[in-house]
Length: 256
Image (cartoon, rainbow, N blue to C red; front, side):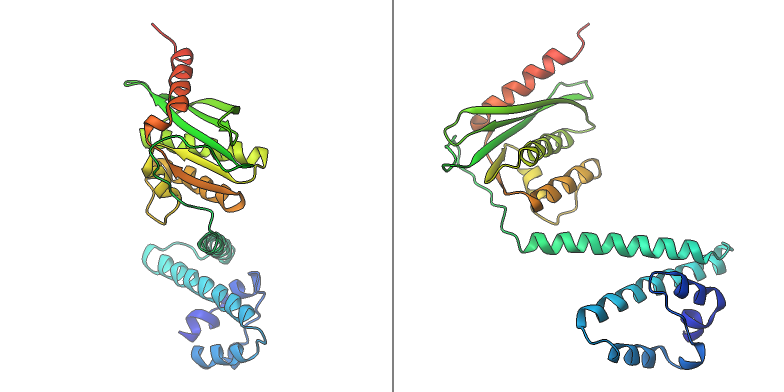
C-alpha cells in the first residue's frame, strides 16, 4: 500500500503536481496509518485537517483507478490526467455538498394545498406557472405570471420550448417562474404550480428523471439564493396561467 500510494515514481508526480503540492519523502513513510496520524497532529484547525485528508482520499482513489486501468486495460499512465480528473471530481462533490448543506439549514420551502386562490401577504408577490402541450407535438409553451398581494397582474413571461415529456415541460415552467423572481430581485415570492411532482423534486433529494435533472438543479440553486416559497395549487386555482400557456401554444405552432 505504501508503495502504491506514495512510493511509485508516477504517483510522486501526482502528489507534487496537484494543488496539495505535496513532496513525498518515501523514506519517512513506513506505514500509511502512521503517516496519517503524524500529519493529523500537525494541523491546528479541524477544518483544515478535514479538507486536506478529503483531498488525499480523492487523489488516492484516482491513483488506484489509474493503476487498475493500466494493469487490466493496458491504459498508459498519465499523472497529469489523473490530477485533472481527481481535482474535477473532488471540486464537483464539494460544491454539491456545500449547496446541499446550505439548503438543509434554510427554511425557504413550504407546500400549501389550499384549493382556491388567496391573496399574498401585504408586500409579497405570487408567481403562477404552467405548461401547455399538444399531442403529437414536441413543442410546448410555458408561462410565468407575476401577481401582487392584491391579485393584480404585474408582469409575465411566455416561452416556446422543445420537450420530451410533460414532466420536463412542467419543470421548465417552474424554472421560468424562478428566473422571473430572480431577475426582479423580489422579496417574499410564492411560486405556485399545479404539478406536485416538480415541487417535490425541487424540495427533496429524490432521484430526478434524466430529462429534467438539470432543470431541477437550476431551481434548487435559484431557491437557495432567493426568497421563495414553493406552493402547490390545484388546476382550478391556476386557470389564468393555464389559459395563457394554451393560448400562446396555439398561436405559435404552425397549422397545416
